[in-house]
Image (cartoon, rainbow, N blue to C red; front, side, top):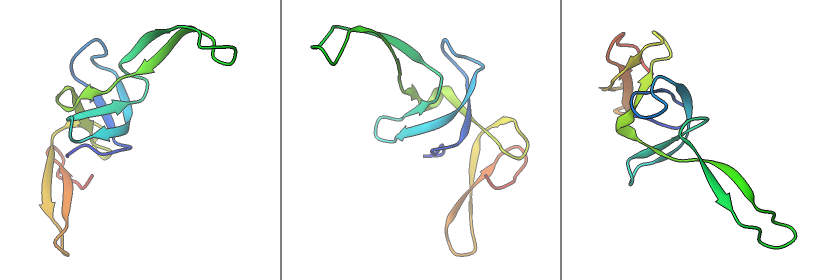
Length: 102
């Protein structure tokens, strides 16, 4: 996946379009990412005994990876991610706009 945990991303579609946040968790098999403070839904819970009262709880839900764009830490713009092979054969992520390593 081109987006990893702790990356800063911009939301490009949906009700939170234009907002930014950091990636908390990545779900590669589902093709989704969990972004902090974005895509918050409210869930109504029934009381489950004395220790667990009911109420309305805010729950963050994962977004499809196609609806987020990585923000380059160097040029601070939303960009696509490219790949470059390093000296030891490892794959490195690069910014398509400024060509710097991410």
